[in-house]
Image 1 (cartoon, rainbow, N blue to C red):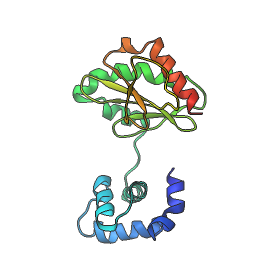
Image 2 (image 1 turned 90 degrees about the vertical axis):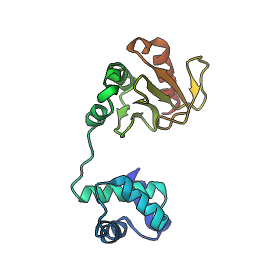
Image 3 (image 1 turned 45 degrees about the horizontal axis):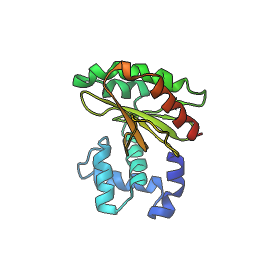
Image 4 (image 1 turned 60 degrees about the horizontal axis):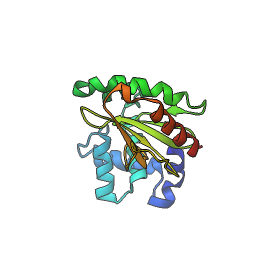
Amino acid sequence: MMAAVTETMAARTGRDLESWVELTRRDFVNAGGDPLDQRAVRNWLRDVHGVRQNSQWAIAFEVARRAGWSMPTVAEFVDQQYTGKKAVLRPVYDALAPRILALGEDVHAEGRATYIPFVRARQFAAVGPMTTTRVDVGLRFTAPPASERLEPAKAPGQATHRVRLATVTEVDDELLGLLRIAYEQNG
């Protein structure tokens, strides 16, 4: 995705990635802005220059990278998500992740700050601790199956539906079947 955004950035924004990084360092960082605070960089790009979301993310990521930041691993993202009061939910994630990855050799996990997306050709599932008592499994369906456990959703990730889980026992055959359907619909 980053490559696609940067390839078309000049046409969409009037500047290529390198020019945006130089401008951000000159005007934002030299004015006291923190290059590692990607949210602040994105807000500045939006508010001052009208840069749209995907370009904001790409620019902020590159500014932070050049300032010494490195992207956390998936394991590090997971560790960050399941800390403090949410630590009790880690067994739910640990029960789900290997089963989702086992759906096919083309499945991989990616890291995000608040959830972990599972992707093949495109994201089909996402798992994240949404409260201190609940993990949401976001599922992307083109044709949702009938299930009383599914509810319409726009998160986590690219979900069209979600299933709420509070315990490991809810990681059952029905949920695994729903994950399989989402996997098959997003190939």
